Length: 97
View 1 (cartoon, rainbow, N blue to C red):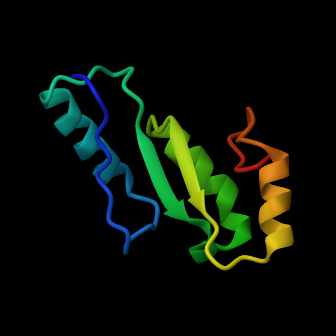
View 2 (cartoon, helix red, strand yellow):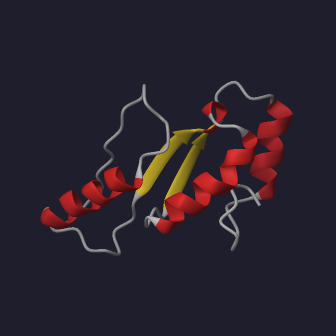
């Protein structure tokens, strides 16, 4: 399968469930994608409590998500800057840590 597929709903940026991700993987496989194909998920972190970020990042990584795009919405600029400065999830799977 060449190219990229970005199924998205701009109104719904909550983390998808494990079963939704499994269904998406199955659909991509049926279309010819390999397991090594990147799986990108975009979420609105402004809809999550900061304490939930670690759990969400770990769950997404556990389901094979290779890119987790964070939409910070209306978070204070200093908070967004700190998150960006912290970099991508580390070995712990933590968003920004």
